[in-house]
Image (cartoon, rainbow, N blue to C red):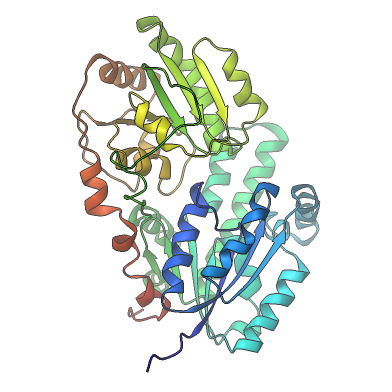
Length: 405
């Protein structure tokens, strides 16, 4: 007779379905893996009305679901209360009393003893004295506070001051949560190592890495795919990602300003396709440049990856692992990445996986791929290191605290 699955509380800052952007890809696969071993009680938010249609889909992996609307304007006003309480803005931005009540009631009703929190912003819901006796694991994914520090480095004036404040206060909170929780997970060993260096020696053993993965059956050059576009050009390169995310916006703007003119001088017919939802005004403006195409939201990024000459990831602001790079490599596409974009993936550098730093190197690497037709060999690295069954194999042991501290 099968034993009933024990209950587990999973708290995620953004609805983990559909898995169509960075954080949602990881949180969805965590949810899917956890549902095989636990009765999952999921608390999350949705901040895009497009995602509301998917709330009911979560029932197939969850025992109960609380998915609340996160109005960005209301959350922003709430976030500003952080100035009064001397908190990082991130915390009140993601705080709702309804979610806090649901968490407490669900924990008590189902006798939940294990909690997995996804991202520092959701730790506040499991950080009270009534949760102290539970097994609590946080998946920081990456060091959020360092992203704010990077934003500050690229800003001036009031923005710089604001980002510096957020970086300082959020780092204090990250360190406090690591001390109080049983385990702290990060998306790569590079990220975990960087966080350990912020901690006292007696806390460093709490920090472990849990790699991202990629669905290699879905992202496969052999998978049957169709494209909503009537036809794609024969000669284009591609960038994929959520185009309202500052790091992605910064990357494509830098690329179009500095690298794209060089490539067009050598190949006037070449096009650059920016593929991803919710493009900001700055991204939409890039389509005024000759050869640049901004698609907006697409149903499936795979046709664009499959048809492109190669993919670029010129990230100048980044932490953790870039899913866009994993997906392109799984499709067996050549890639040109900044050092930040390749961090954590650490693929062997070759004619199909180029890392370039700065305008001159990045332009040269792109021209190198445009001048040759190398036989891509990137998929094998992904199959050997970044399939979800492989990367999440340790998850049950981390939740059960089976690793010695």
